[in-house]
Length: 230
Image 1: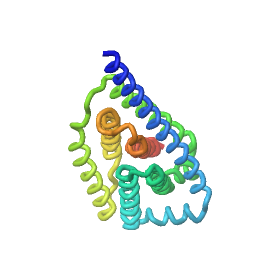
Image 2 (image 1 turned 180 degrees about the vertical axis):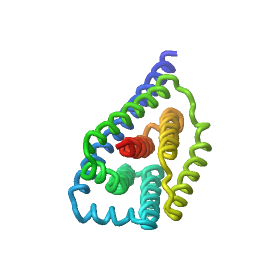
Image 3 (image 1 turned 135 degrees about the vertical axis):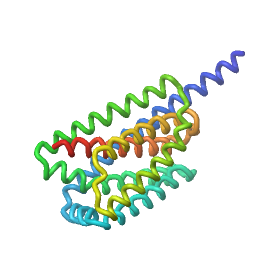
Image 4 (image 1 turned 120 degrees about the vertical axis):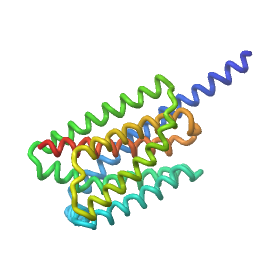
């Protein structure tokens, strides 16, 4: 009985350590994103190149490149048994996120009045919502794996609408951004649920990447909504 109790306590401690490592890596990912974004925004070459990719159908090229880079990075982080390769994949993902954010953050920070305040408000709202949604799963232990199908379908619909909007020149508008925030919130619930049930205790890099991706999606569309109100 004592041996069983010890094994149970040991497994619980190992799981708690896994959670701590995962959220530490999410925090480090956010810090790395901020640093890389700062460097990108203060490089005229990077800014000009990123802005050039937002013109017309070039945005589809940028979006396609982002999807390829993040898909490759995710495979490295999830499938590789090497921690170095997992971290390389995570870093590639962060760099790709930082690059695709360049046009949006450049407009907010340098071309809008009170742009810095808008970015801060978006960051606070994003962090608050992310923390609240994660806490719901961690404290209730509810299984949100059932969201997988809805998130997959929603993701494909969103991509289709973005492509259609780019090709035919119509603005997706506020309701699309609101819908994407709901999709990002669902993704946070799903990824946190995976944290409890899917990942092994040595897969904290892959778990962190999933949460980081959902966090960035949420930040993007919260920022877009706040920018559209100015």
